[in-house]
Length: 486
Image (cartoon, rainbow, N blue to C red):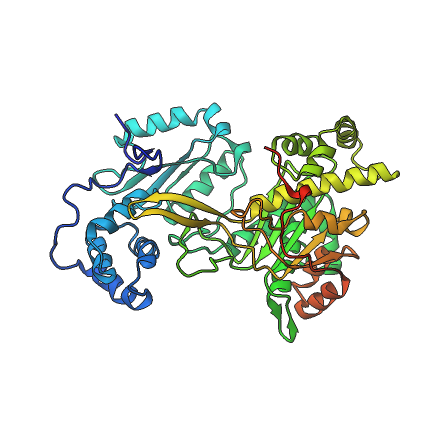
């Protein structure tokens, strides 16, 4: 017997559809007047969305963001606006797992079922919760108080197993329990207060406060506050802040337009983007969670020193440009990465060592950009095969910057940046197509990000002056070196 709320195969196509959706049998028949809450939503929505089929998914997302779920008469209202059968709207809604058809409970209990949590007992926790609440994952108790959910990962594996219970009403009690158990706990507003509506700034502020309280103080750097005040933040957050200023500009200082920064370090490779990345065509629907304007992704397995061996391992498993793959599959690459992982302060001295750094940095940039950028996917829907966008479209990015020692002091920084760009051999990866290429020649972006908290215009001017322009790459073409291995 299939569990409600779990993805199951839709049959012949093997595609996934929402098993928790109401039975389609009988859907689509005429119903009575809209409920007041749906009527209020529809009065605004019909003016905001054109009567085109491409508005179907955005209208469903809008309805769920406003109402918390999709009442059946919502489908009728959307069908009437788009002049399509209600069964078509209901079929599309039931296909995507992001939509729910039951009103959520006042309190949500979410259990992480990722590997780290599962091996530490989250499966048993889920079984106990189901037995006590008498509901399956994705369902709500009969009194409407509790909805039980599962997620693939919370991103807190070190604390496994993780269960998040309740909502803002339970914050104080939850924090008190954690603190009583000796675990530091901090309160902040939800990063997604409404469905498909992001508000990440309060959480970022809490991260900064935790950094100052624990990391800075532990290293004795809190004494620096006597001289610089509160201008202290994690380096990655400073780079993200500077990326946002470079993209938008501030005051009388113009920005560069949509901007992406690749920061390659010894332990991680970070990619920062300052753009909305929405589809370039209005008819292209987006799937997945909404993307923030300023976004940072951290790849902990892609580093040039501490993570050198994991970088090589991942690179050898991925489809890389042919010449790059050849270099990294060599015996010399294995010996060099093994040495660097245990001698993390080592610098390249010979031409061969410099070229190996270029190859490793290129692999890190290529894979990190692929993970950060959005992609095009094809899905079978009730209306036929449809192209959808998942994540940010970076194809129209105006500026691509490289920061870190490998860019400021290494050989051939342009090669590292160019390998991360759009390629016709993989047109479904929405990487930058023809941005201007820059290097943070004086390695000042992070410092400018700190300065921006007090003097944003001066910080932007400083950052712009430190950039060294490498040029604009030619239009993407297929070359022998770009062919991917299987």
